[in-house]
Image (tube, rainbow, N blue to C red; front, side, top):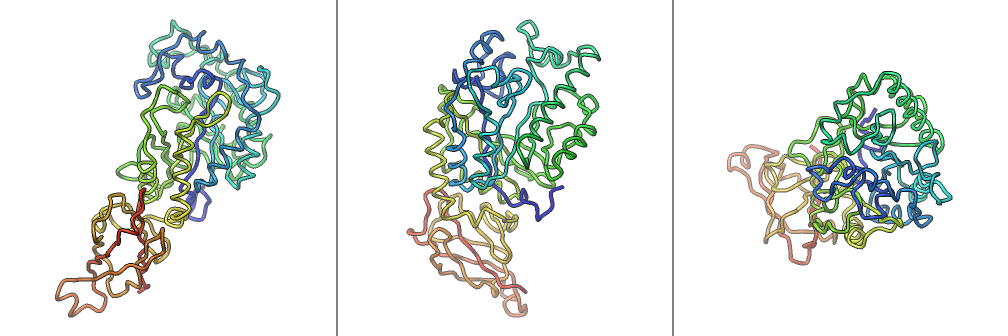
Amino acid sequence: MIGSDHWFAGARFGMFVHWGPASIHGRELSWPLVGGNPVLPYAHPTPVETYYADHLRFRPERGAARAWMAAARRAGMRYAVLTTKHHDGFALWPTNRFSIADTDYDGDLVREFADAARAEGLRVGFYFSLPDWRHPDYPAFTDADQPYMRWTAHRGDAVAWERYLADMSAQLTELLTRYGRIDLLWFDGGWERRAHEWRTTELETMIRGLQPDIIINDRLPGGGDYATPEQLAPATPPDGPWETCLTMNRTWGWCPQDDEWKSARDLVHTLCQVASGGGNLLLNVSPMGDGALPAPQRERLDAIAGWMARHADAIHDTTPGIAPWQFYGPSTRKGERVFLHCVMRPYDTVTVRGVPIRRVRSVRAVGTDQALDFTTRAAALDELLNRDPPGELVIRVPAGCIDDLATVLALDIAPE
């Protein structure tokens, strides 16, 4: 489904949006109601009744998605994914179960998101939780069901499960028929059941029948088009297309007590590393209850936008660059141009190894387009006997070319 010419293959950067009624209280989505999650330190255990108590008071400012999508475009993002329904079962579109239609909000938050994304030229993605911890036929989670991992082994009767699958299919049909072309479907929570229980083959057939060009992540057990490592750039990139999703602090939903923010430099470095492995970075934002983005997230998006305005050519539509032993940092490639991402501040020079030194045409600093001086060296016999010797390129990097977030050098090599 995802070839080298597919939009996803070169997108490199997208926005994840985790949002819902839990954001009213600055609470992590869903996980508090099942007793927390050890990998989410701010998902403090919350009684089920308390967690859901104010869900129907969810009434954000209309049009909040327009600000998110404008920020995404400025930051160089090419697609966006909204949590249309998280594990707690609340749907951001009007549907026949627990949803925005049950609140005083007179609108459809999914439609607002899809329209805003397209207005900014972004591809549209929907996150959808396979589990529904409030649905009576899943069955619904209660305080007596803790601990969570023990509860996941519980199964209701077969008739109830058929009703649940029918409701899930109906909601997916709504999402895939009401909002025009949907480019990406991001499942989550599939670990709670096996592929045959989710009816993966039948579900994928239905989805692709409704949206023939859609791509699906790998969290539908036994299905999907691309891998989704979480919260890091993997040391060894997965085979095939992939995307890593990442929070700016340590929570997916808005949690004001979580001030463990990654710096803008750290986020840019992760973007460089992911691109160098041929993957995409899906960077999360977590709007507050009214829909506004928290100030620390806006600040980081603005900083990334400034860097991408100067360096997007080294990220978008690139492929992995040279081997790790050739350069101490990430690298990407576009045709005969290799981009060197200096995630450690350069000293006076940067060295690149194993390149055809006689075919190096130029080296430039991407952010300033300044031509840089360089020298070459190779093994003595290679220089004497080889018409196209591999060797080392030593690039002088003036202080004025150093970027505060990440310096990028463009190396142009003539074809053989």
